[in-house]
Image 1 (cartoon, rainbow, N blue to C red):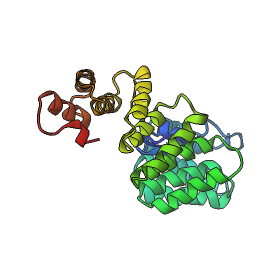
Image 2 (cartoon, helix red, strand yellow):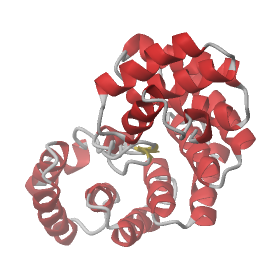
Image 3 (cartoon, helix red, strand yellow):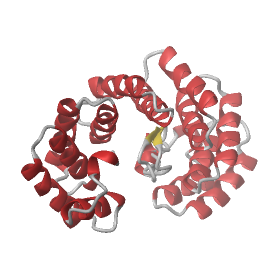
Image 4 (tube, one colour):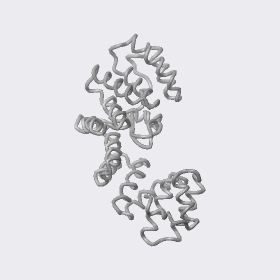
Length: 266
């Protein structure tokens, strides 16, 4: 699943990230559609269904009940962790993912998901340890999520060169990942690589012409290259797409010729 807030992280419920837009953060993995070994567990299956619908409180109640009836299956605490992550109960999510890993130390989705929860809780060193463990492990689809999440972690540390590298590694395996293009563009702006950043933001805008972050940041890149007239068009698109967003307010100030120039607020 993916984090629903997911702005960022990719949960090993990258699924949650779908849900995941979840944590607004990284990419979590999505709860499995169904685990054959748990097919007879009504509470588990119903809990997953509730979670996919965003009904986290109901999912938590069902999954806690499923833990009582199936205490040794790691998929149950992993799914519970995703539900707690959705609720931004990061401490509880870390505990649930740790329980899943205690039951199965090779459960790579739970490892990545725990990293997402640690990142959202501000425990950057612990999060980095989990993401790196995924990357150092055997081949797995979770490696793409781990690279992306590690890029988000480095962005929060303002280690922009490292963040750019991780987002590039994400895109090497997932070339249609607009979130990684957007995140890499933001890192490149911080590195004053306005040409590369503009290419990333324009890639995002091909699929989502109304993306306010990509429109605003494209304008910033154009201003840095002296393309003020064209930048104004992207500022107007930003205001049209999301007038009350931070980007929309900054774009309005620019268009009104107020002092706060967009290049200052990257």
